Image 1 (tube, one colour):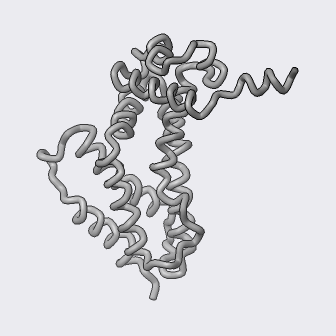
Image 2 (cartoon, one colour):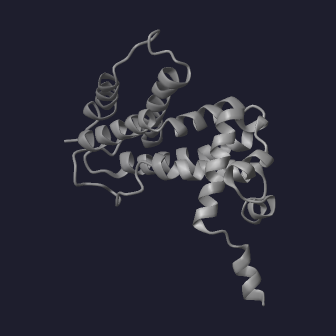
Length: 206
C-alpha cells in the first residue's frame, strides 16, 4: 500500500511539463508578484492538489524554471576539466558567442531574466537562486580554468572569471533588458575579441 501512495505522489513528465509551461506563461504575463496559482493550474490543465504534490508554492515553481534555464545557461557542463583541446582564445570565444546567441534565440529565458531583475528587491531569494544555480557554476569553472590552464595560470583567476562573465552579462543587460543598444552601441564580436585580448593575450605565459 505504501508503494502505491509513493508512486501516486510522483508526477508524470507530461504533467510536470504542463505545470512548468503554465507557470512560465503566468509569470511572463503577470510577473512573479502578480502570478496566481489558480491561473497556473488552469493553464496546465491539472488540479491544485496535483501541483502541490510536486511544487510546494509559487517560489518552488519559479525556482524550477530557473533550474531549467540553468541547463542552457551553464556554459561549461559538457566539458571535462581542464578543456585542453582548444587554445584558450578559441575556447573562450566560442563559449562567449554561444552564451550571447542563446540569449538572442531564447526569448522566454530572457523574459525570465527580466522578471528576476525586476523582482529582486521584493523577492531576493529568486535572485539568489539564479546566482546559485547559474552564475556560481560558471564562475567556479572559469576561476579554476584561469588558475590552472598551463597557457594561462593568471595571478587573479577569480577576478578574471568575473570580468569574463560580468562583461557578457552587462552586454546583455544594456542591449536586451534596458534596450540601450542604440544609445551605447557595441558590436558583439568587437566586445568578445577585446575582452579576450585584455584577459589572455597580455597575460599568456609562453
